Image 1 (cartoon, helix red, strand yellow):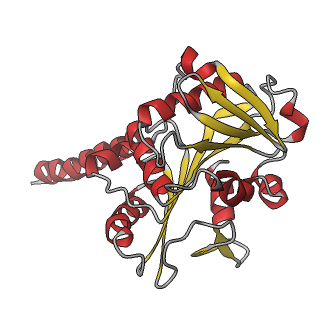
Image 2 (image 1 turned 45 degrees about the horizontal axis):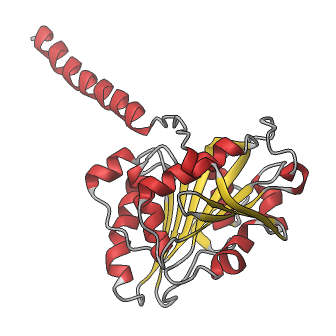
Length: 273
């Protein structure tokens, strides 16, 4: 009788051990080996635009890169280990990439909070009126990091609005090791369970509005699923905000240790630590 009880005790203990090991394995973040590609590394055009450096590579991608002033002309230094925010605009919004979304992340408030040395910001412009080809965009981002040693390849976050919000999640699904965190505002990517399992170590901030018809029905299930299972993730749902992008001081509904309400800024800072 005593022997059978010991066997019954060992079975649940063994199952528990397997579950713990599986959780550690599934939630462990794996580093990405950056891939050099001449078409993405070499630039066809390059110029300065205020605080931004404009580049067009031979693969046809156009980007604006912000590097904090103290490293803008010393970008081969590896010691700053700057986080990188990659920004994706909505469809037919190429002109809004900098003025509407890029400006969020070069603000003094964001730069001071992000790290002692600030953060880099990469605004990607769609090659057509919307984003396509995650394989190509993944190579683009990897080669930007290779060219700018001041960027920490383990601290890259993606941010998108509308079709850009859909694409940034699609890109994370294509290459789960690329982003450490993703912000999707009014996105509508319909993630499969098999994709989500690969993304368990990635931190997501999803936000949708119930009166954003068509978008909400597609995007909210993905947001809820990732908030439930992915590491340190958030899903924020509004009643009447319609089609919107995430602002730094949007609240998640959770409280910080000091009693204040957590904002999107608080979340992204903690996600990239």
